[in-house]
Amino acid sequence: MIKVMMFAICTILTMGCNRSSTNQISLFKDDGHRKASVALVPVIDNSDSELPWSLSEEFTEAISQKLASRGGVHLVDESDVINTLDAIDASCQPFSKDMHWMKKSFPTQEFLVFIELVDHYLHTHPNQKIAELEDGRYSFLDLTMRLRIVDLREDEPKIVLQELIHHDHNIPKLFANIDYSEKHWGKTSFSITPVGLAHSQLTREVVSRLEDYISIAKSR
Image (cartoon, rainbow, N blue to C red; front, top):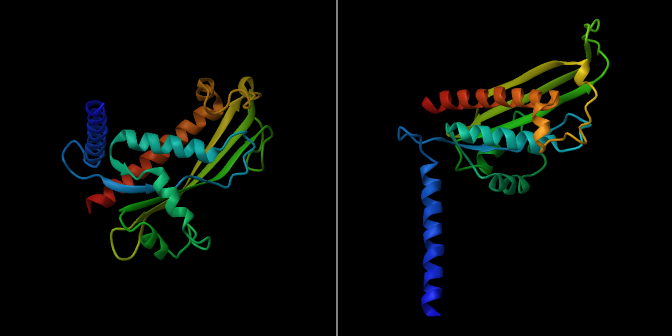
């Protein structure tokens, strides 16, 4: 019985050591340079979308996974970021001019990333920007995301990037009446829907912008 217990303890310790080793490896690039340490705040959804799932969860998961898979940065564990945010006063706004709280809240991180989904407008009638319908076009998807990257390495937080990314999509009439309560995020079929494809395209551009600007800032 004692041998069994000792074996179990050794196994647990070994797993812990392996996990620690893996975490350390993930901090470095293949060339040996240390990756930028980035706290990615969950996407803020202010879009008033009527889709039957959380766009915040969808985009947060998609952006963090793609950013991590590219291997250019080291992402802080999302649960640690959320725990930190829970302790922050509501007056501390991510896109305000006052950024001092960011340095105090994330003292060990190099970069802090905020993403806001400003607009997610899926509609079947042209809005004021569109003078007339094209033949064979029936619905439209307007997407807008706001990005802010804050450099926390110095005493004073500094904005590395702040911009709006706009995507406008015309959806062919053949695909205009898809039931997204059936082909929703999480299902394989969602990825080939017009909304799924549009989200994927926006995610790729956001990740590319984040990685490029963090890499440039890190190299300075």
